[in-house]
Amino acid sequence: MKFNHSCGLVVAMFAAMLFFGENGANAQGYVEIGDGDYKNIFIPVSSHLTNSATQQVYLASEIGNTSMYINAIAFHYTPYSSDPQATTRDIKVFLSTTTESTITQESGWLPVPVSNLYYSGTFDLPGTQDEWVTINLARSFEYDGYSNLVVTVIDNTGQAASGGLHAFYGSLYDDDNARAMIATNTGADYYGAALDQSEPGIPFNCRVNIRLYGTHVGVSTTKKWFGFVTSSASSDVTSPSFIEFTMQDTEHPIERASFSDLLVSAAEYVDRTLYFVSWDKRLYKAPFPQGNISLDNYETVAELQYTPYDMSYNPVNHTMYYMANAGNRKLYSLNLQNGELTEIGTQERTVKTLAINISGEAYAIDEEGYLNRVNLDNASLTRIGYTGLDATYGWTMAFDRATGELFWNQYGENGDCGIYRVNTLTGAATLVGHIGTDNRSVNLHGLFCVDASSVDVNPALTVEAAVYPNPAGDKVFVDAQGLQRVEVLDIDGRTLIETHERCIDISALPAGLYLLRITSTDGTVVRKVVKKSL
Image (cartoon, rainbow, N blue to C red; front, side, top):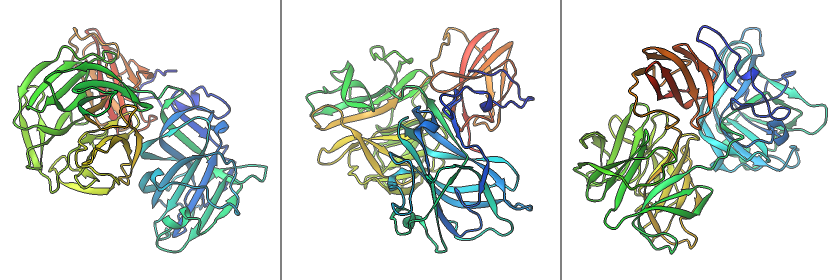
């Protein structure tokens, strides 16, 4: 379903959506659970406690039995006192699934793996009434559509807010099947206590109203991934070659091209074009629109000064970043038109991977196996946590920019290898699968995933269109001569908003990457826009 509106009109986009099931997912991509008839000052956090832990269970039937990538959650907030004061809490949010539908004091907390940490940071409770407070997750949680969802919130603020208490709307159930639990602690750290069952907590017969936002609702999560094989001990995979596979089935890659004398060190997909660099320092490009999975018409752009370990494109400032394999630990920006490298800075540790998400945040894994945040202004590194793996030769990783998930092709000194999902909050790596069925070493470079950047645009037309600000907040503006229509699309190409105005209200959309399909008297063009977290 799509909407026609302008910035001057407040539209209740989400409320007007169709639902699947009683409280299921709507076409815009969120689920709302709860009736708001009951208040509880403890769940999911309480501003008058020093520390707390809460856990809530939401049934698959309440979510609508629909699979989705959850990229944000929102709690319905209302002040408890007559003199509300805004307060900021320091929290951690864990998401997991369970077959259990109730929580009891005897059974204690439902198990939550530490690797299921999806948010760590501040949580702002505004001092106004009846507001939805949204948390944009650091990465998306893949909900399967049939398990019950567990939301665990740890509050480690360590001090009570001054002034009045704060509360959240909750949903009261007539039966005795508790689906929420709370425990409080006056100590400095409640993180371990909530997860190791040391304090069982008190079951509650209510839960807060919650919204689950997702970019993939009722849509297949299978995506095409690609990479260049430079060496292979697997009988299923030849080298050098260019392969296609899915994260659901890494064992059966499809060979899309083979080469006799081309070894690729790094690759990146940008605006329907594939850019890749060979070990002999040549930059190539090939047209690669979505659906075109061949690689038989590439051309040379330039000869470069250094071979890359990895490279990644920043969709926020439209810049390609290049991690050099020259023994100098330097980060560069790469001009895709002429191959010119511009030095950004020197890194204090050797890193062999680079991946940038849709918000322009860069990550790298160093030789000792630690995940790092990369400052793209000066190349400095900040360690996040240990992957638990040998990273001697593991030099390609990439984001699924729709879900925020980070994938890494690990290749160790002893030939250990595999595709891993890396938690950007903790650094922990979880095995997704191996390339090939015989679990032999496959050295993969230039890992990337194709998004929906190539929706029906006529490349022969030259359409001048400016989109600003980018990244955008609640509103985005389009300047185009003879503007006729603007459509806001998700990365799967689904139309979310349609308008004839140059000012588009995107306040109801979760943070993430979107496409603007702009139609004017000159033709149609697509521009990317990032909705930033507010």
